[in-house]
Length: 359
Ligand SMILES: [Zn+2]
Ligand SMILES: [Zn+2]
Image 1 (spheres, rainbow, N blue to C red):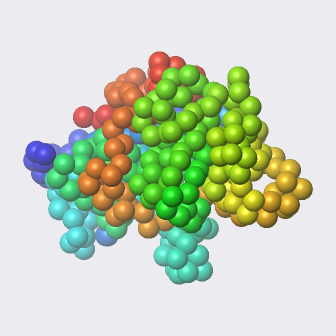
Image 2: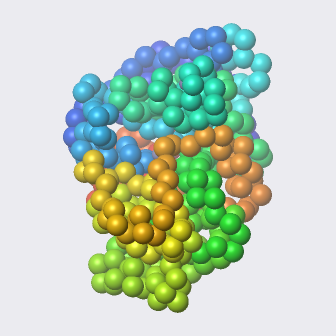
Image 3: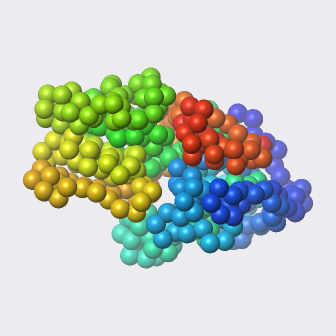
C-alpha cells in the first residue's frame, strides 16, 4: 500500500469542510479550523468514515436516550486515517502511517477503567456523541494510544470497519459462545452481520438470522448465515425452534433494535441459554416477558460499546478470517453526506454500510 507523503504542519490548511448536524435531518457543510495536536495526541488526516446506525439515530431522532443534539455537532466515529502530525512526546507512531482509531477516550483512572471496563467509564469522551465532535471532516485530533497502525494489505475502508467489527467482537465475547454451538442473530444490518461473522470465526455451528428487508436477507445468506427468516411473513420463533428440533439456539444476539426483537430472542433461545442485547431501540424501552426469561433461567447481557478489541479485529481482517469488505455497500463523498444519511435512514438502494471517503 502506498503511504502518502508526510504532511508537515506548514502544509496544513487553516480550515476544512465539516458536516455539522444542526437538527433532525439537517446536515450542513461548513468550514471550521483545522485543530492542532497537544502533548500525547496526534493530528489525523481522515481517510474513511462509516455512517453508523447510531449516527442515523441522531439524524432522524435528534437523540439517543438522554444524549441529545442541542448544538451543531459533527458525527462520525468509525474511521481510519493517516497520521499528519505528532504531538509532543508521541514516539509510538509515525507521520504517514495508516491507522484505525478507537473512538472512545476513557479517563484511565476511574474504578471502571482500573478494573478493566473502559467501555463503562463515566468520564468517557466519545467521538461524534453530543456534545463531542466526530470526524465527518478532513482532520481531527486524537490521543496517540487510540490509534492502531494497520498492517500492509489492510485498507483504509477495512480500517473504518474495525469499529463495528470491534462491537461485534465484544458482543460475542459477552455471550461466552462455545465452539459448535448454535446461534440466532436478529437483524442483518452491519452489526448483526459482523456478529454472525465473529461467531462463525469463533466456531459457531449453525447460524440463523432474521431480517425484514429482502436484500439484507439475501446478503446474509450469501455472506454468512445458514438460514434467514422474514419476520414479516414468517413466525421467526416457530421457524428457529423447528430448525433446532424444538430445542432453541444456545445464544441469541439481538441486533435490530426493534420493539419485538428482544422478546423473540428470548423465545428462540434454549433453556439456560444466553440472550445478548446489542440493538438500540428508537423508543427508549425494552420489552421482555418476565416469566419466560425467569423460567428459562436465561443469562441476559447488555452490550455497551466495546473494550480491548482492536488488536483482535486487525488480526481477524489481516488473516482473512473475517472479510469486512462486502459489508461496505456504498462509498460516498463528504459533499453527498446528507444524501447518504437519507439513504441509510430509508434503507434505500440496497444499503448495508455506507462509508464516506475523505480523499
Ligand atoms: Zn458505530
Ligand atoms: Zn474511566
